[in-house]
Amino acid sequence: MSRFFHSSAYLRKILNWTVKGTTAEVGWVQENVQATVNQHPVLSTKAAQATIEYANHLYFRIAITNRKLRGDPHPTTKKDGTVDPYHASGIIFSESGNRLTSYHAYKNGVVRFSKNKYNVDNPESSGSSQAFKTA
Image (cartoon, rainbow, N blue to C red; front, side, top):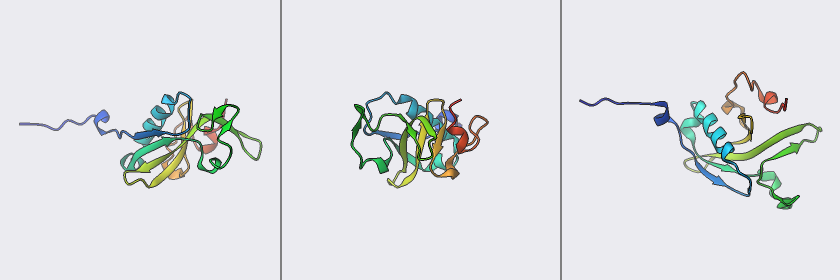
């Protein structure tokens, strides 16, 4: 007689990662994004691949700024003067290669997706504005 054994480790989705245009250590990005994807019931079943890269709309600019590759984690000053703190950017894809959402991953463990339906809010990051606070 056999029984089925399920553990949370067994049920976790393991993403296939591609790192584009970065020379920085980005293991923390993979860990944070992976953990956040696994918290979302829909995204965890659809997501299969992920990239770490600089936002697509900036690919048309000069590839190297201040001797750092554009794919390295970075802070971003927005048009309104606010600062999006040090973060890495990337894209989550389905098994068939369709883009599901993009993300910003922060050193404090917060991951925010471009499609709000995938954001898993918790007491430390309730809403997108909370993810951008530095204090």
